[in-house]
Each structure stands twice: as structure tokens, then as C-alpha cells.
Length: 137
Picture 1 (cartoon, one colour):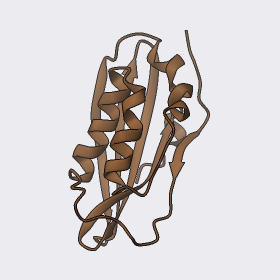
Picture 2 (tube, rainbow, N blue to C red):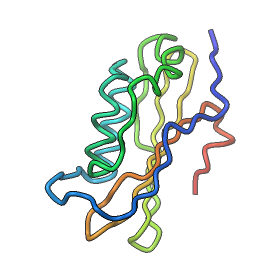
Picture 3 (cartoon, one colour):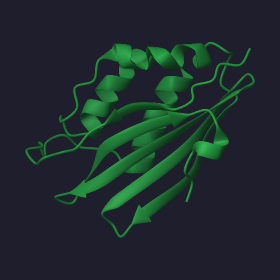
């Protein structure tokens, strides 16, 4: 069964200073993999915690925001959960793309980070099921 999510922007955040340096963040690639792993393991309720940490506390996302991914996760077990590409824009902005493939359903994940005071901070996570719309570099 195919479930199509035309374009789901889980979150877009603009950070305006005031983040806590005490909240360590994985590398962007590792952090995006943690988000993908939570989706792959159907642990959608854990994603807000990952996002809060990666955004250095700036994001407070309700777990219900991820229920729209449930139909995709339920299409079957994840067959592929792989890094696709990472694009660094002058050491200030970085985008990481991943592919999750369930039984007959692809889900592309794009994580965007900005470097603030020397640390990468998550500012956007987007998902897409149409490979023509994943905005690869």
C-alpha cells in the first residue's frame, strides 16, 4: 500500500541567540541519523527530544507533529536507512539528506543546520516521498 506525503515540513525554526552551550550536539550527520533511526524504529515520540537537543533547547515540538509519518512507518519494516549526501555552504549552513525505504515506500529526510558560536544547531527538518522534490544538490 502506498501512502504519499506530498511535502511535510516537520519544523522550521529561526534561532535568535540565547542557546545553551551546555547542550552538546552530535555532528549534523550523526544527529540526522538519530532522527532517521527514530522514524525507522517507529519511535516517533522520541523525535521531539532529539530535536530539542539538536536545536540547543530552542525547539519545543509536540510529539503529535510526527503522527503524519505513522502511515509510512506502518507500510512495513525499514529495508534501507542510509546517508545520501551532505552539502556544506561555506561552513555556516549544512544540509544532510537520508533515505529510508520501507516496504514499497520511500521517505527522504533533509536536516538543515546553522553554525552558531562554533556549534551546529538544527534549524529545519523536512520529509518528502517524491524523489523529484527532495532538493538534492
